[in-house]
Length: 126
Image (tube, rainbow, N blue to C red; front, side, top):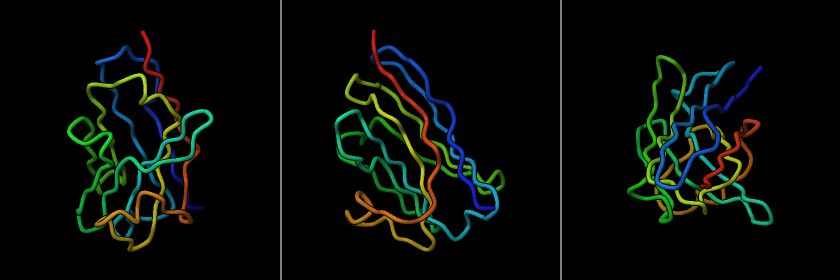
């Protein structure tokens, strides 16, 4: 059974940091791009970051220079390090896997299909 499980969310003060994990089971990430997406209440889902199977990385402009995505194929896990968090980063964060998908350009920002995790809540508040 193909499954993605996110973890690491929580409540953090503005300026703080969190590291989200996306653990895959039932398939290997070697052939998949992993996208991080988020959805805030009353807003549409938006792309946050993308890392391809070949190691190409892309970020949304809103998180560039604050968030860092990395992969650990040995653990079949992708991480999203989030620094300098802002209240507007508050959302449910999801990871999703897309077989042999690219991360260049902007199409990944609104990608659908693939396999999705259940999400983890991130709340940035004082």
